[in-house]
Length: 230
Image (tube, rainbow, N blue to C red; front, side, top):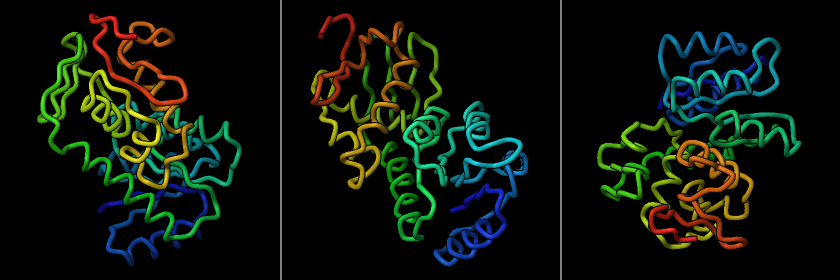
């Protein structure tokens, strides 16, 4: 797998290149946000490992710019431990978040989890029509009222999991395990942010959702608005 690591510390770049290469990955490094964006313009990697705290173009802005044209998975690294920074990173388009310092085994596990859910999102669910949402998982295409939606890998996997159980409640822990992996069963913040992002793309009024319905303390349901299931 081709991995691009973007950081402003050369020691971290060298360490990750050596460690990840030892596990069979092809690793490119970029010193700083602008160098990372330039590298992506030359060749799109399979996955990006991105530091948040960088001078000039920081990780949040790099993430937002990447999401304007690509769905490539982004794993954020940061010494920042505040919950607001994690939420901001996820809101900017990151797929996962790892705090510094971290162990290489943890990082590899997070990479595997991200790639697994991307691969799982292409498995057979078929073609589902929910209201004006046309979910063609065979062709990896989602449209709303005839307009194709641009979804991140996480959003796509989340929607697919809900679509496999249309009208039924899917519990928080089930969604977390299916979309993020078994280690995330208690990480409701990831789920909440992803659902909010998805609602912004498919709901007329995200504050009063009609497609993705919240079942308090339990989970979420994907519903056909025309059936008025609340």
